[in-house]
Length: 496
Image (tube, rainbow, N blue to C red; front, top):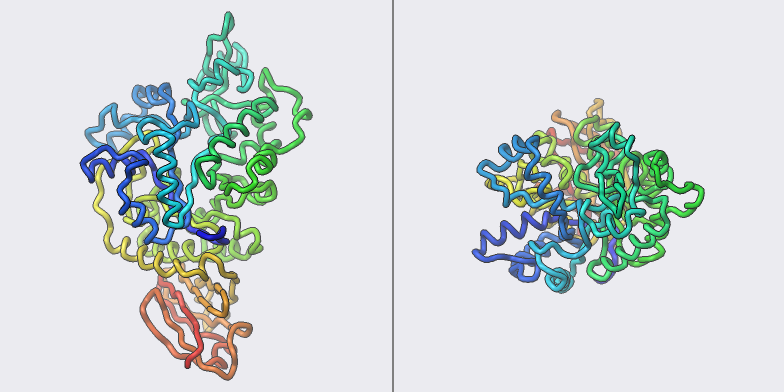
């Protein structure tokens, strides 16, 4: 990757499960430093620009014990991993005791070796950053308890699951567990205090250390650090300082400290625009995911009418380690056009390991494996073909534009979504039918087509070729008839 692309592809790897699978396959313990070269080659061949090694940092042993001993998780373990043992329960990668590699995946040298292997192949490395909380056994809990949100004994008695009592010198401190405003506390965490400027500075220093070993960071629950949200969530805290003492947004401090690092935000609650303004390069597009999964074509179309500068900084996805498997929750008909759509939109496209193979079992992040699944070969072939098509520079560095579709005699055109990619005279036209019914419409191409020329239209997705007159493509427009849940990816070129 000679320059930072406008619209890159990101592949998320659950590092613990991936290395466990590789160790079984190759018959030896595989760390990040000795991953067989053909595994990196495969990722390069699929056309990914960034690899997110999720879960490389040192996991909490307290958290591991919690997930091993709490009986509420046994039905989950039985469902996803019959015959599981305690060794399969490794603790959460989002309950971190230090930003050092977890021994199960290697050491700093192993991590740097993996980055080097990616770099040789033109790919770059993304790692996690968990700013909202630490593990309850992080050294700061004892060395710097003032870095954490605290309650008092009455708070603990009223809500004992929300606090961890910590013996400190001759006192007991009640450290709050991490949470967002809408869910119960995360049981294996300790909530950091963003009212404390010293904590902020210490966390930025941790980021500087991480930045020496990667090209970008994925920031967990990034919206929780926004001043207004943090105040609403934690202003009751016993040890809070006046919020007025904190004027600067934390993410502005981060962007200043690491100006060249790619910043990716997991974020929700309509905070995407604000986080873009604070310096994030890419922010999760949960709204698109929800609309593809649950709502009408109209809602998806409306979402894609947003300004291109905004859309270019969104992370499109159909699954990740937090969401259920797309092959499980999308019916097969709707899944295929949804894959075409998200794969060919502007912004960063996130693919999760196992997604391409059509895996259906979601891997809980505190397990190292789930029950084996046979790959869905037809779905894998479809993904690989689509990834090959989108490896073209036009999809990663071109200019994107939505296109209007007009009626061709009925209302079925409302089921279609169409847009263009343009780069150096090349033209790609994508049309997606997100409805099960046969749909048709006309797409006027006044600005892209010469009236007195003929054009070759190669459907790269369906291996079809058409010849059309420029005059017909301008007015009344290129006539499209699409079977239910089908798509076109047209490369449009002048006929010699």
